[in-house]
Image (cartoon, rainbow, N blue to C red):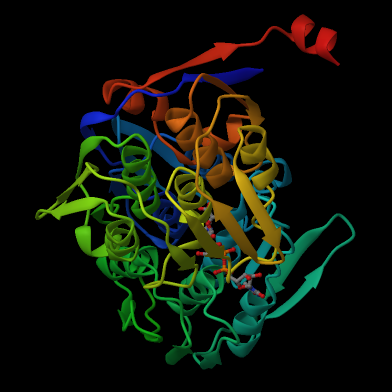
Length: 427
Ligand code: EPU
């Protein structure tokens, strides 16, 4: 087992480059199955979720070649069985995008129920609603595999009961080859939805309106290959912005799209953080006190739920009482107990956390999921003393080279290996 050890109190300063977006590449890699020629995907982050997606494609028969550290050539033309191996699919949430893609390509898909972070029930009824509107039928077999099948896929109007990111993406993927016009209403508007639409259009799809709540898709028969660069990761950038603020640092975040950062930027500014925007970078500085704030998570362009734990960690270092309301997931405050070990004063009532600002002290804590893990790192950087974080595989699922990036900014952070005997002794 490995853990992250942080000696808190160092002020972060310098420059950091943001990697490609996890949740965009999680849809784009499965979507390469539609292409009838080679695709080159650039700005791919080196994270576990990408490794797992590439393993799925490779086991299905794709030819994958690393061109350099972040560019990958993928040829999926030899994939002939629309079945995703169970042992890999269960490791990540995004495996459900193979349902939409394989349905479009083969009129049939078999994929196990997806894995991913656990913050309450994560239903996928809207994905099935969309597939059914296009003419598909679904069933679950005894082994827990989801089967989706259609004689033909026909374009249709799909109204989503909630603006689900996953359902919008999956329906877009299934509809790109359906006959006629599909209209997704109440679609999600997150930057990675626009990025997937741009990739699909670059290989020949006809998608309009991505980024608004009505997406129109004219089905086409053939897809070419393309070279496509993934957008920068909004949440990785937001995480470093908050990390910089929590240490009262001065950090320039490079290779980003400042527009995507606005929901986070505006909240940090209200807390007294100085945010300077440039064409493709953003500078974070804190010189005065950090002030309290009230935040509600909302679908884009609202404040992202995937920044909620990190921002709550920042609130623990601000002056006064802040409020964080979680509006997307039912149970995304599981990490609060870990922050309490570090001296945070947080009370949670249902989907609302009340945070009394103060000082944190280092402690042994656990990453309860990906973004909760990022919150522990932020708390550890701001705390007095040493913080040891366990379950760091969650963090590595979604953050490229976090330890190297923070070390370059001046953090005292390292990964250590805990021998198995030591773990057994502690039990
Ligand atoms: N929902 C339903 N039915 C559905 C789909 C969603 O009731 O069929 C509900 C969910 O229970 C939730 C809300 O709708 O309350 C939003 O869910 P959504 O479908 O938008 O989430 P997702 O697609 O499963 C993606 C990201 C999450 C991120 C959410 C919200 C990926 C792989 N995952 O999940 O990212 O929290 O959108 O923005 O893109 C993360 O990166 O740490 C992460 C968890």
